[in-house]
Length: 285
Image 1 (cartoon, rainbow, N blue to C red):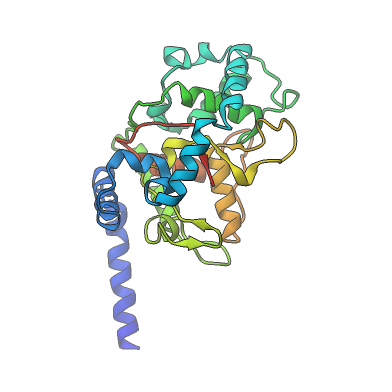
Image 2: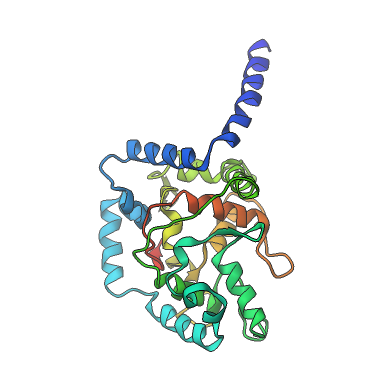
């Protein structure tokens, strides 16, 4: 009993120290952890996900990239980008800006997809009629095209002191918190166990994960609607899928806006890819 009380007190003391760590310190620690776990893998290679650490899967992936299944979706996204006049809502006309998202402005964190949805509504687009929904389909295609124009640019998310840091820490807590009937956290799979097989999938490292979103996943193919878009999804669609896998309830958009917990998670998660080049959209398991 005495040992239990001492251990519990130690956890209570240590917990605040985790949240007080700076974003810069968090990033350095994650990079050091992965470099030790996978020696010889260069930083930018982590943008290739599991294919950076698995030679056999990399061969299969490189073959798919010769005729990328996401190319039709990027073409469709470009046409919709122009049709809905998205360029007038963003700096640099929406071209080559993905690497700066999520960003803190106006007292809150903005994701690229969140600003895209706001843009569509501002431009008078009937999103319901046009079947533009967060996460997939035509909406994800526009986001994929915008991300494609940032290929080669390094992720450069800023976390200024104050309110932004609070949201960052909210996302960090979500990432490391246990949830669902399986009692898993994001970190359990992607920090502590990357490279481990989970059923038929090999777990990817957290480092660099956001650089290739939106992604075209083989698992998502054949979901109905336009077959060229059925395999496409954003990072927050993936968060929902991960929640389901651990038997936790996915967080859905509220009042036409992305759930604040997923926004915070994406803010933290993307910061952990700072310095890694955007290579979206990608092909994944």
